[in-house]
Length: 362
Length: 251
Image (spheres, each protein chain N blue to C red):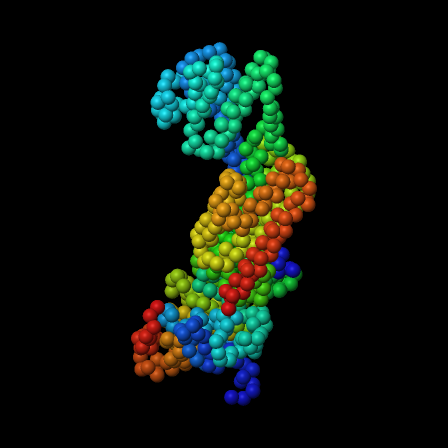
């Protein structure tokens, strides 16, 4: 136990005395929250609209005004013929064109043309425009007292303002812990191999498992500190509600942190140099977290093979659990599946990693 | 050989072999090293000297043969061996971002020296080296020669029976090397056995006995004096070249 503490102290010295490491460890979570929370946003903003209306009747004018009054849309251009729609879109003048037919009063028809080069954005634009139009027609029908048509009433649950930070914060948490635990742990273990000090430790009577667990402790502590920072920033700066239990959130985070540490350990047992450890962690861990965890791209929209693969990305389960607890406010029983999967994955990883270590010593 | 003699042998190796697949890195070597002896282990790169040393330290399992280090079997009693040996490699064993004292304390702790004993022994060590004023300096701020002296002192801090030095003087000038060897002699005079690999021939001359490995086998083993006589040459350099030129293995 004394030996273990001596090692833990040594690891803390390594981290505390390396300013670059300290900066990465402490500033990265804050930077990510700020970048993803504010700068990167999938919310609609400043959508430029073009209008093609052969006959500007009063109802068309009302519709145009209604769209223009919406904070997301700005009417920037009146287009004279349908060929110009394509041209304006290519020039980047407009994102959406709204086309009214010539006999709109007797037989109202509206065509909406959307630049779908960014499909996610196009979807939301479509959704917003449709609801504005639907709104208008419902009002109009009421005025002329027709029999009421079917009324749809949409409620956006859990995230009524459609804030993308609600989606990103769980994602950032999934990313940060992988980065700090897996990347930093593997680099710090491999650094000892590279510098030759690992050999000296292996010649000493200290058991390898003590050396390795001592490496994990400081990163575990740092990760817990980061968990607090992220949550504080999320609640205060991004004003994300905490609908569920903080205790459960921390519990599942601890499982995930442990899993990431095991991942780092496995990486360090497979590679020889710090650069290789960095690449393995970034390509092997960070990319799947970004692409396959549901953080940016919804998993349900992926090809079936990628959906399968996404099941072995731990971040997917963690992010899903965090969303359920934090945003939807569900009880722990609803994230039981995620917790079990993450726990099993951790145990599996730690066993494989320790086995690898043993084999290396032969 | 009588019984007394065999107790005084710190290393006993019989027909030790290490194979990696079909490649025989260490081929059936046998030798003994006595207490307090400075035993040089020479060989070109790839001759197998590092592999042989790793087996004796418990870093690598032997394929066949017998060996005892400090009286313990290298197959079954590696834990006992590890407590009784010191180790210093070319890359040194010190942590650059820890202070001189922190390094000593860490290694003291690793070898299970009690906290209350570490401090006086560390101060003794630093005083002997004239290092007391550098106690709290980070190791990376020290010149190479100092780091090396410190690394050796740390390797023998737990008073091992035997210390393995793996090309300990790589990259330092002959003058610093000379000073380093004074430290080695001093340790040997206290009864610590020195097992040193090197490819500097001036260093080879300082050893009590030398073994020269070629292609995994020990081709010569004697005192530097006798080896020169045996091969009828004037310097160790010539002895080494005569033997190493027989090597079939490349690097």
